Image: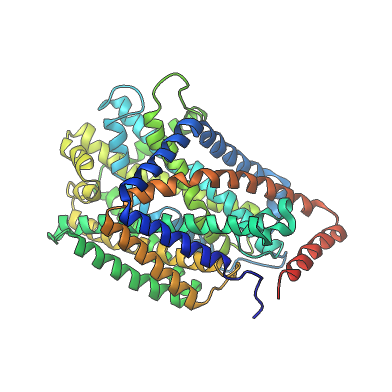
Length: 516
């Protein structure tokens, strides 16, 4: 098998950085936390406007591409067709994108905003409506637009231009052959670092929620031993899935995720306040669209921006930090689709799905707290967010069944995310190999599990989360440049066929010169 020069550069450098970070986190946790928090507060306070402008521009960019003449360009050759059915494709990108976050925040976030709104009086009707508007805003078009931009760039260059499946490949129109040198390797190392630590953080937080749910439902001891055991079980499950391949493991798990998620949501719609849920959906979609620009650019030059920094800017940074992982995975499963299909499937359909989800869970929760006076649920969300979902279910018929299904869903969502992450990390450290070896996936799976366990034991998960978010700032610049590079690449598709063939031939020749 041919290998590119510097085959182990990304793998070696990523492991060295990871080891240094983990060791520093264990022995100097307070100092690391202080450094990460300082960097995060500096970027959000001084460059919060940049996050807001960047994400809005990315949304506009995606919509313009959808409506442009480029929409009919296929991600691959014109004869290529999608490998996965549309339903399986949507299930996979939704599971990798934010599936588990919907369970964690579906009830808690609307309640948080209701009791502590960005402006106005708390615990009022206006606060309830505002809470749903901002929840839609944080989980709607903006995050999926970020995934769309990164995923589309990767899919175009790896399938249309036949470049390696690496973040650095998307910069070929700007950097040329330099994508194979130190600049390109640095970009790929940053993407690897963001993917590993972002998923490790989520795995640790998810473990806490599973442990909290088992304690709430079955009185299992919520100890560090239980949490480490859960990580071990999840590791075994996602390693089994990873070794079965993309077309079996991740595909099957993703389909199972969507079936269980839709079932839980459907049961809640039936046994919950059905009419209220659809009222919330209708009203909040109107409020979201009506206030879209205001919320997108809302930052106070004269006043306190602590709420915006804690929620909106935090989310935008989090989605950007996750974009190399999710974008790479979405690109990998999207070969053969047109740009128009891609944007409709990655930007609009998942956003609509999240709106229905939050209307069901958040709308029902606010109905309990605001209309029915169940203040204990709001107190639960403030005291222990890991069990808020399970406490919420106890207010409805079939609550225990819903809770058990949700525990299963949390596990399968995390197994899918971890499985997808090992696949993408394997690609990054194998020079963009679309089917990384089982050995490399096992290595990354063990590293992912070890990082999560070590940081859970050392109490550094919050520090790690802060650090991974802070790392999103440099990557936000990369995403902006990626959009520009994609536009330049798409413009070559408007050349006459002979010139386009010459352009693609030059790329192939330059890539071959980097192969030995």
